[in-house]
Length: 271
Image (cartoon, rainbow, N blue to C red; front, side, top):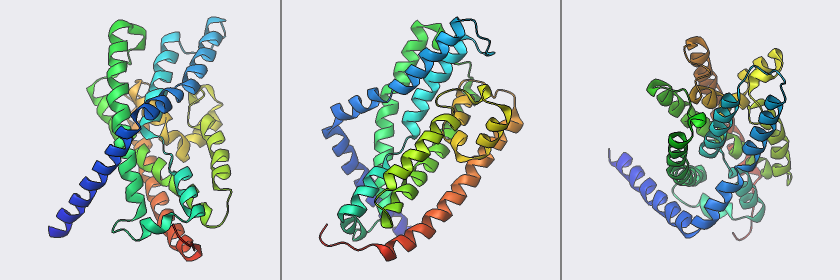
């Protein structure tokens, strides 16, 4: 109990520190959040134009609007930026200071993610509720059960994204191209996660492969739950959560293995 109490107190102080840092740069955080709206809104405008041209996609204008609003919110609540921070810390040697602290460095990233995503949720969710009240086209056909499942899927996705970001960041132990390698992953993720278009518009074989890879689990699956696209399809819902659980296990084990070997390679002066 004492060890758990000490751990909780350390985490509380860590969250307070990260919250203070976020408040000091709150304007920058809002600008960063607004900048992230560009890709989902551009994709939405493109698909609405295609839909208005009469091309048959099987989806209505409301389907597209709700889907890409879901992408916008889910992506902000799950996105991880740890690859850039860890890459910089390893290359500049500032990771040394974190290694001397009583917490594993990933806890600093977890605390930072919790603070910033809570801040984004505080802004985005009420904004969507207001939008739904004044514009019925933005209302997702989701009930209370779907919202609970969406929340669980978003939490699992956040864990996956943090681990993925950290894994790519740890490549900086061996190469100075870690962020470049991550951008290659991002290019694939843009398509197979359902960020640029719903996976239902992709060839069936591509959608099937994406559903078993970590891409769809991080964005498309929570969005499909939120927008009611999986309503009543209990087999797909449970399979989605099973895939998330499997990838969290794989990524967690890979994280431990890569971290231990990375530290053997790490050396820094100063920091």
